[in-house]
Image 1 (cartoon, helix red, strand yellow):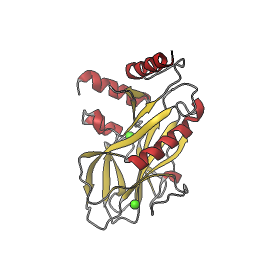
Image 2 (cartoon, helix red, strand yellow; image 1 turned 30 degrees about the vertical axis):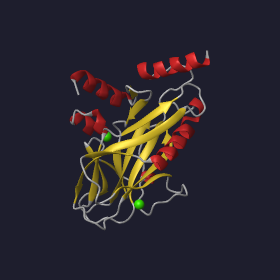
Image 3 (tube, helix red, strand yellow; image 1 turned 90 degrees about the horizontal axis):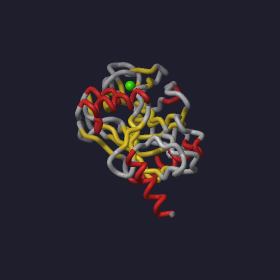
Image 4 (cartoon, protein in one colour; image 1 turned 120 degrees about the horizontal axis):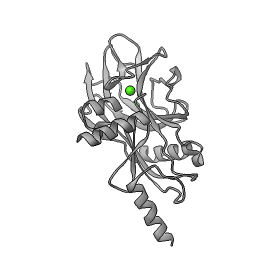
Length: 244
Ligand SMILES: [Ca+2]
Ligand SMILES: [Ca+2]
């Protein structure tokens, strides 16, 4: 990444705003408030380059929490038309077969980046909404290769899309934070961990593609103020042309 792109990435992360992509969509990079939440309710790794899902030394289990500012797509009902989540699985420690996997959930969107003890979860994959919106079972496992970016699958993407449109709430959710959690699905051994890259880690690595990211496409209200820049503007123009 060149200096200009790096500076814009840093600015985007600082503002909790969004980047445009070359295609007809856009990217939200996790806010720098991304962090882990321990079973005892304390927030950890807030400024680290990696988050720990699992246990650090003998301490309690941690869940990794990523926060994504919802963009301004106008006063539109269900503006998102597709969505996916990705993050770099950076490293592991003391990982062996038989250790728990990592499941992926979306949590209630919120107006601040505050992470609380209620955000932590460790346990079997729950699809009834009781511990968040279930996105993907076994997103990471002990045999998953490290130093690789993993994009969510079709089922997770459909659930994420519905979640984002619900959180957007016709425009009432603009600027609120969508929340993604990585959590262990059982009791991990001492100092057994999955490490995933943070927004700070992507800057440190000088590589935005490693950042925790929600990629999306959307149909913004053409007359509404748009923050997406060129790509989305083009999309809007094309849409206007089709309608005209
Ligand atoms: Ca952080
Ligand atoms: Ca699981």
